[in-house]
Length: 215
Image (cartoon, rainbow, N blue to C red):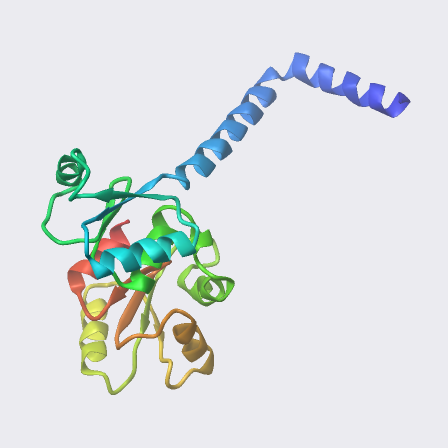
């Protein structure tokens, strides 16, 4: 009891002499809450009836515990305008999280999109471990390319990145056992496959790689 009273007295003196410490502490708590809330932004999945990719996307998001709501363009009177506000388009599914949008359905691409813009818990433990190489020591996303020596598109990509002054980590799943295991855990795919953090870009698409780097 005596120790508790001494601690309370010390805290009271600290508050009286340095009230800014408590203001800063309160601001830090608020900032933490805001950051946590931002990761829970609801995703909108735009779908239509009798659409197999739409069903696959909804099933995947539901299975992985994503925070999302389906918006059916065939039955929701406000859906068309909502999609227009998100950039429009005539193909589905479309997944929107805040100001970010993903068109079409590819399981690993969609998971990476949700992990980036909403919550990384949609990834399995194995997927998160594999993606650890896609971040630097400070936790900042970096560009990683999975490719081989014999792949002509990989060679073109390396030349483009080098000429453009873009830093990247080159991983060859066929020569590096660890890279191969990570690539497999992330769903494999053709060469090259790029990642910026959790975001996936399949194939050598300059515009998509630059877009991923800008986010």
